[in-house]
Length: 343
Image (cartoon, rainbow, N blue to C red):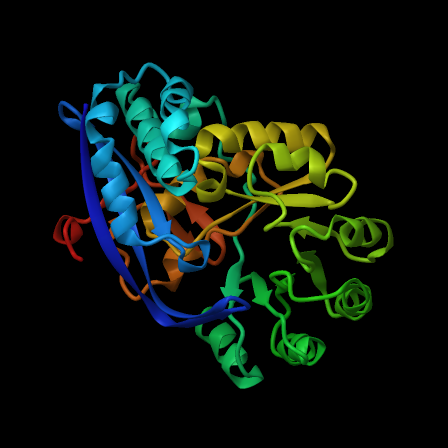
């Protein structure tokens, strides 16, 4: 097996603002695992507010390149288990390698990944499109520029109700709200009442991630479902979220890839909680990996590649919220030839 490392800079269509700041681009690394004529691809996005940077990602991969290249890929879970002791503190890189392993594993079987998992792609959930924080005028412009049946509205301002009222006047779409830990318990309870009347489907992570007492109050009192994001990062968080949230948003890069995500989905369903998978701002390689989980999900947020000025990869397409799969083996994602080294 040969490991190839492809660093990328991903300029955004427009500045993207959330409670953590405003971003004009993202950096990412695409890992490629090659065996003979076949290659598997996976992606790790650099998220600066997690204290990581691109140079650190590349250095760590290069440091352990010989170890990775000596591993045998019998199953993705076996591959993940061998990587975990070294990469447990680098879940984004672990995710990239795990996705690449799944991609290569399915390609060896000449199957799309969902078929390798014995899943069918019927009646799939639609993805939302994210509206970043801005003036009401700016947020309306974002919606007008990208018509979609579901929007995820980033909030965390003193004008959150006014924002939703204004957006509702211009759209009949389903709204989901993501407060990114910016509200208090009382704000959430009050906002939920108003937002339910305005057609909001659920609220994602309104409180600080460690405010378990507050979340328990919301679980029992909120008129809208509450979905965990920052409070749910790895598999041990699922049990903690039970009876504190009505569902969880699983992100592949936070949990370490498809291998742990599948376990988290199974455990969440066993606890009768809703399952959502979210994304980072990432290319169609990362987004294509998420697509194969769709038959297992209640909700999905996989708009990351739609936020890019130019997608350096090929993969699944999104049309009016619907995911269109390529006729391809593996995850169906690959780097465009002109972008293999574009940093």
